Structures are given as C-alpha cells and as structure tokens.
Length: 133
Image (cartoon, rainbow, N blue to C red; front, side, top):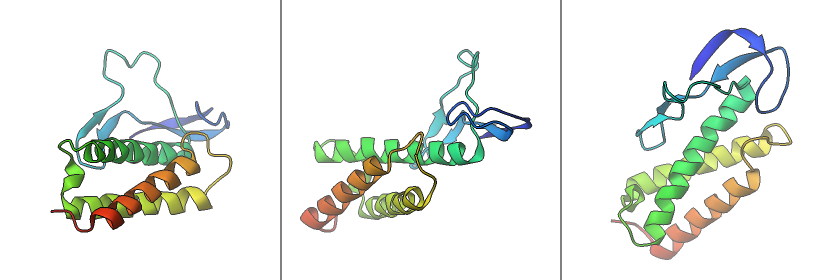
C-alpha cells in the first residue's frame, strides 16, 4: 500500500479531506504476489481513505480465500487442502466478519453479507469433512 502526503477525495466513499492510500502492490492471504496496478495500467490509479483501504485489504483476502475454497469444493488442488491453512483462513474470515460488522455502515467495498456467507460455508465444510489431511 502506497501512501501519499496529500489529502483529497476518496475514490470509493467520496469523502473529502482524507489522507489517501493507493492499493496496488502486496501479497494476498496466501502470500502470493498481488499487483492490481502494473506500471502500464497505472494511468488512473484509485486512491482510498484509511477506512476504504482497510476494507479493500479485507476484500483482497476474502477473494483469495473464496477462490481457493471454490477449488477445494470442486475437488481441485487447493491451498485450503492443508488443515492448518484451512483453519488459518477460517480464522481470518472470522476476523474480517467481526470487523465489518462493527465497522462503518454502509460498507462501500465489501458486503458484510458476503463475508458472513463465506464464513458459514467454511464452517459447514469443516464440520462436514472434519480434519483435512
């Protein structure tokens, strides 16, 4: 996450006079490289206030965990096949669920309902399949 020294209008919630951050480089929940804005595509970067950048970071983790969970349910190779990784991912979604429920409203980037549904799916899978190998 890159921070600018300027204040401005958040491209997500449209609040003004905010310190802004650009979400572009980093790693997802599984420590894979994450680059939403390569140098070529960085012509019109989006800038986020602190709350929106936190929510954007949550969204990144929810997306990566959901993608791996869909692979797991489909019987494909998934990073969530490892029991420890699965439990760590479930705990991360629990943390995000807690944060979005107690956070601001309305949520601009990440739907609390989507997080809650993913958490319920993970918990149901874990209950149905017990300890993964």
